[in-house]
Length: 200
Image (cartoon, rainbow, N blue to C red; front, top):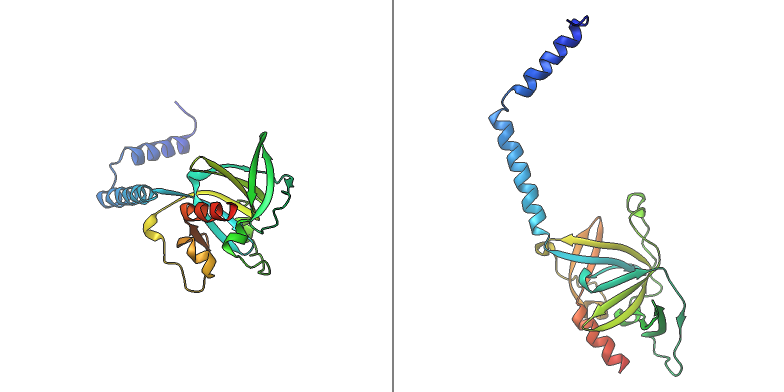
């Protein structure tokens, strides 16, 4: 027999609490919350790779992003002075064309970069080389920041606002609000076609 009746009393109270059937209203509320969370997760049917070019946060289908690497030397091509092509970059021994995506989208170079919030800074990577694999073709571009892949509900995608530059709007399929940012969703098919036309 124990010498601590207070401990015995506490243990008995805990046993009674654990043994008691849950209140039906509490059980119903908990079941509803779990079902809502499951529905919310099921709605996240698309995956988006989010990155920043100058002052614009943009997104591409995550499935086409092959690698995200530290920046590396870009070797310019002779007789190629067009703003779209930066040159060739060595990606694991394979020479890959590196394009200036901001040139294609005509994103204003003078536009200030958005400030990072203290909460978001930890989850954002600085300048990176992003390698895309689209329709058996590999391309790379440099992003100013990378926020990585995120799942989202396509029902939450809004229309492209009229304030977006015409060049960017031509490649955009919508806008998604994400962590206090507006992310422009890019059409990778249209983007690749435009790049190939200008490369040809």
